[in-house]
Image 1 (cartoon, rainbow, N blue to C red):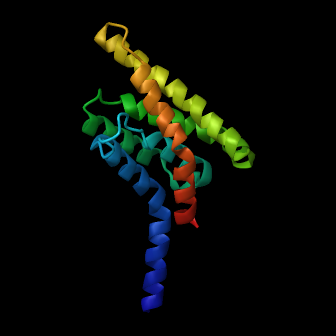
Image 2 (cartoon, rainbow, N blue to C red):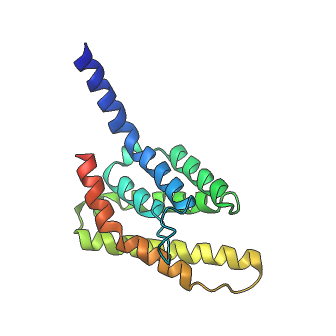
Image 3 (cartoon, rainbow, N blue to C red):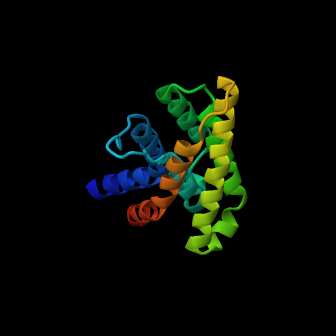
Length: 163
């Protein structure tokens, strides 16, 4: 009986972990855990990217939507901005999932870089449009590049946990 209950608990954690880890990444991003660094990485983009490739069936669209709303609410940004970015990232990766599963790690890493770059341009464009002035995109570019640079370590960690 105890073993059966433990097995059910393990299955529950296995199916909830991808979405739970994305919510943890949102919270880590918004509570500025990496404050000591000159730039703070955005962990949510690589997490959504990784889980969409490796466990898309455990990552429902409403969960991504709620993670985006939580990110907007905690970050004080316009409601829907990060939600739109998360859903765009999820849809773009889901459409190329089979290719990315069979691609080399380097190719997958480069796809993350270009997707992150595209999302950064969208984020910068929305912020510039709202503020009605051209904002400096350098900090945003460097933060997204740092997120992409951390992706191999994040992948290593999530592969260890996933298996």
